[in-house]
Image 1 (cartoon, rainbow, N blue to C red):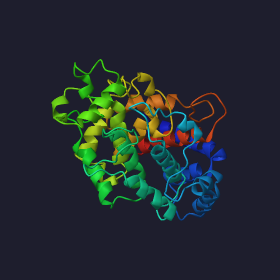
Image 2 (spheres, rainbow, N blue to C red):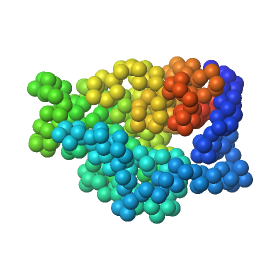
Image 3 (cartoon, rainbow, N blue to C red):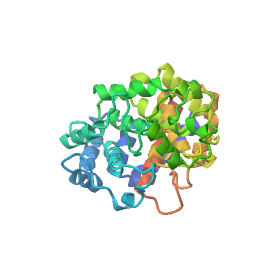
Image 4 (cartoon, rainbow, N blue to C red):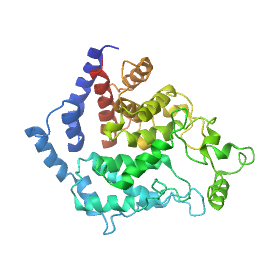
Amino acid sequence: MLASEINRVVDESSRKLLQGASPSVRYWILTDIIEKDREDHVVQRTLKECERCPTRQKLFRTIQEDGTWPVPNSRRAQNRPESGRSMDQTQITMYNNLLRLLHSVVGSDDERINRTLDKVLERYDQEGFIRGPMQHCLPQPHYNGYALYILYGFDRQNDARVKGVTEWLMASQRKDGGWNMPYLQDVKYLPEYSGMKMDDFIRLAERSNGNGYDPNEFQDIPSCHWTTMMVLWGLMERPPLRKSKCLQKGADFLLSRFFKKNPHPNFYQSQKNWTSVKYPAYRCSGLAALWVLTKIGKGPEDPRMEKPIRWLISKRYRDGLWIESNRPHSETEQWLTLEALEILHRHAKKL
């Protein structure tokens, strides 16, 4: 695919998006795609508009003294206290709101943000991972990837606990280059457990507390596509790691599975997730995977990238944007388009 073709798409859609973009989306177009310096007067004016954005102001206004946010009613209704898979909605609300603030160009020097980041890190376990938000004893690499994306984004790379999570994730990479959910995506496949309901299995795992568990005994079970994507999403926010053997091997695993069914039924198993455009990345889609792959450095020198890039261009709507549905565009779909444009921009620069 010629660079001129991709550059045309990026140029046309960037101009279209700029016409009605929110200040934060406009900021990232100016800096990441048009590549204006942060000191440029247009960029500086946009930053001031970002500060006045009602959504951003509301998020700051509703941070509580302990660094958390009130849980939205929609999330309260989702929780199932009787289930082994119930989620700590306070923790996931912190993650989601921190992500929104990070993407809204909030810096790391705000006292309220640092109070919330400290709250996230309170759940650091000495084994090297952050506990939760699923309320069981099992480590959750995918959510640790999510946490790392936020922590690195807010410049917490020198915190010993952040370094600990990074080391734990890199050390838990499997032989095929991917990651999975310990116990849930390996021990669960043993004949004596395969017929159990997931909630019953989680309760059994909590009672045993992992005694006798050796992940090396389950290397024949393939890694999870989307756990891998989420782990890479966090690790790749530390630029020096992008060229590491660990991340390059992980990217190879993810790219080799593009468009394929996830082998694990408990996490976005359908192939349709690859051909979806969804935002943010934790919703797991082909768009999110391409974001991670191009950030790590995958480009046209790898022939496996051509089909996913062509797929991404094919999802561009007739008005030049990327959308989730035919309904009127929401701000979410501005972010979808921004991510697609950044992916294509990075790819074209390597052609």
